Structure formats: structure tokens, C-alpha cells
Image (cartoon, rainbow, N blue to C red; front, side, top):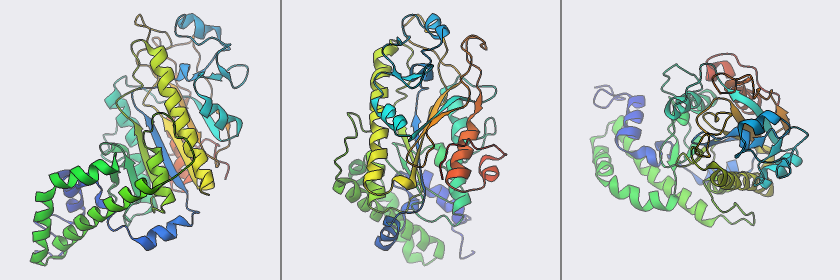
Length: 408
């Protein structure tokens, strides 16, 4: 047996099997080892960080950035359309949803880019399929790795621990990588207390394997042991973080990202999802959508302010997306159904605030849906190339022109 193989498996196979077979992906094999000196080096700042926020469920872009200057909007939405006197006006054509004071503030400060008409060819109306396209950055490819996973591999082929963090109840396809396994957690207290109990058998097996003396087996033991240590660091960072910034009524993960960044975690990519398909507003949309946009706007704007407060504002950019938009017309249930093009955002001090892309026509429709005007991979290229400095063609499997929305 080769000294670097275990049961016919190589190191990469062991990583994959460990993360998905033994359940250690919940706390992240990539967490090994989290060292204090690494944290101290990262705490000095300077390295660019990308934070991606997923609005799961398909956000209604038309009632987020409202085209109040277009009468076609009100004809299509006689009940759901938000009246001009209520919108938070951006200009003579568009305005934010009335509850989005946080985003309005970011925009006025020049720290928010609005990307109109974002989508892709031959759109899918399935949450699962469309999200897979966005997660992989490669529609119809069947790729098993995510675009952020490929970005991590391109930036750090060695698979340095803790490069990617996924704040979610399960690992997103977006962060699945060849050489990296992300640190994945939702509630740091919950995974610290509950997950290890469920994994005791697997950990005992790994501990016993240590005695065999194989380098591969020793590697398994070291990774499983250091994963437990990473839990302690995550729990302590989140428990000890103190900020005067109000993250809003519903905190869905960015406060945990802030805690890790402030603690000096060496992570360069963070992925956070708004849970439970909350943006799937088929029925009685008005109040629900207004409420979750309040939470989203307040939470993201608070994070941007908090990064500035701790001296990392210039280092962090936040990209916000949803898997597709909604149909132009309201439905009979006072909601909206699955559509195509929508709106995306990039927030932070590194952003050149403003509006990008062309707003799709609300009358020249494709079976009731807007025709997209901006390929979502151009937005990805902005993050991959312009912000993180990686090779976009390798990460995105094609050449896509970045949108000129990064200031430096």
C-alpha cells in the first residue's frame, strides 16, 4: 500500500469522503489547523475579502428597486405596485422599497452598486435548477464544483485551511471546491454542543487509526482533531464580539462573519444565505416582502458600517443575489410567480456606487417575463477578476467582461 493511500483512496478522496461521509463538513475539515499566529497575521488587514449573500426563494426585483417612473409597472401590478409617493427615490425612474432605509443610506454614501436586468439565457423557473446554475456559475454544465470553490482553488491551490467559510445550515454547492473544504456552521453554539456528540463514533475511529502509523491515517486524525479546535475558535469569536452597530431585527449571519473577520480569521471568501426560501412570495406578498427586505437592508448595511468601524471597510465587498426574479404581473393571490431577470447588488467601500446595466422592458416580454440584459457571470467576473484578482476565464469557464463597479 502506498504510504499516501488509505483503503485505495488518495488524499483528495479522503477529504471528499470525510466531508460528506463522516459529517465533518459541518464544522469543516478546512478548519485544520486554526492557529493563533495565523489569526494575528490576518488581523492586520489588507487582504481582500469577498462576502456573498444569497437571497433564497427568488427575490422580486421589481418591488425591490421599483421602476416607479414606468406606467407599465402599475398596469401590471394594480394592487402590488408601490406608489411613487412611498418609494425611497433614487432618481426620476427608480426608487427603493419604502422599508429599505439601509440600502438607501449605502447608495447615498456611494457604497452600493445596483445591477439591473441580471439573468442568463434559457432561464429555468425551478429553484433547484436555477440555484445550481448560479452556484456553479456554469448553466447546464452539471459541474460538481461551485464558482466560489473554483475561485478558492485558483487563488490558493494548496488548500490552505479556513480559506472559505459558509454560514449556513448545510454546505452550499457554491463553495464546493477541489482543494478546499469550507468551514460550515450556522449557530456556533449549536454545532459546538450537538454535532460532536453525533460524530463521536467517527472521531473514535479516526483516533484509533492513529495507532496504525500510516501518514494518510495520521492525516485523518490530525484533521479531525483540529476541526474540533476550530469549533472552539469560532464559538469564542462569536461569543466575544462586541459592536455598537445594530444588525437589525433579524440577523441571518453577517454578524458572525464580522466576528470572524474582527478575530483575525484568515478566510478570504464568506458565503451567507437568507434561509427558508423566504423570498418565494407567491401569496400575499406585500407585507412579507416589505418585512424581509427590511431585515436584509438593515443587516447588510450594518455589516458594511461595522467593517468600516473595525478598520476593514476598504478590504471587504459584499455581493447580493437571488436565483431569479418574479413575473412582471401580479397573480390572483396578491403575490408574484417565478420569473426571470432581477436585480443584484454589490455593497462596500470598494464599490463605485451607482446603477449598472439596462432595465429590461416591462412591455416587450417573453411569455410574461422580462428579457435579461446582464449575464450574471459578468457580475461574477467583477468579483473574481476586479476584486479578488483571479483569472476569470479559469474560474468561470469562459471570458466574461467585468462590470466596472469596483473602485480600486
